[in-house]
Length: 298
Image (cartoon, rainbow, N blue to C red):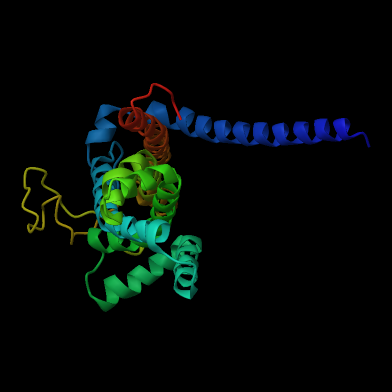
């Protein structure tokens, strides 16, 4: 077959595959938004959920999702930053580095249900923490660490070697070069990785069913004492997240408006995840322009 004809066929196949993927994505997002947006309202977003009556909302579920997201990021980011810097700047090609990379790959490939059961047996049962926000946050760290570590390592490796050599030429130590020169250059990609991983955490359900729980305690948003049982900041209270709420409404709920609640919750979830993804790109470009004094987008 003529090479030009072969190349043309291959190009059409690739374009067709990309187009099919885009169509499927748009269909999925469009279906969720079309069915869910009519049920969204300020009352729906700011009222408590109901177990038996119609007209409930998702206020507590949204707060729980954001709170667990913040705690998970606070726990996992320092660890991932240290491991990422080590792998990119200090690690040598030996058995320990290979073992560390294998562990990271294994963590990233574990099914969420398996990690959830592990968190349930270790934190809920063994340590007797119970179904709680902290149990869910620590369990989600196992998901977040591999993604964050890889993104931070790639961000550091993407920095030009000239930046490091400039620091050496100035007589700066390697650690100060990493912190003062390499890290600011890698910061846009690091922020992008953090925000993208946040989208995955926000939409996680399986692991939280067994760790954070499927119910909410009574929350008083005027009580900001983190040691009070009714405080929203209490990390030892059970917390149903938005993703878990969607699963629960679809499988166990006897609400008269279960379909409307489920569709509205799914629409909120997909909108937040889209904001995370587009926001990561936008913030990365803004930080990149600030640090490099350029108007060009990456």
